[in-house]
Length: 109
Image 1 (cartoon, rainbow, N blue to C red):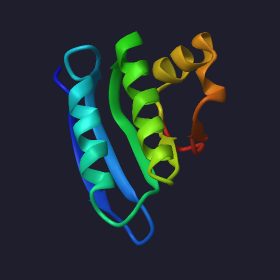
Image 2: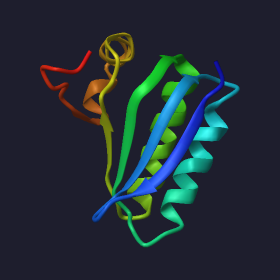
Image 3: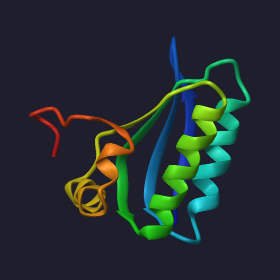
């Protein structure tokens, strides 16, 4: 399933909602969305990952690159609502320490 990334804004940050699979083919979609988000006035970014169903090593690299771009622009990046398999990938690779991850709420799947 190809990745879609929708950029919206709330009062104090940009939200990039991901839907689909983040891999070598779709990584540019994420990075384009981050560039779009940073083009505005807000520098804080929330990556809403409810719809992110798959992530491979290239997807992890894209997330790290996105975080570097946000940080270089003076902002912060947070990952929210990760599926268990994506969260597990971050744990196995030691990248849970590299990102700010919003804990799942008890009612989240």
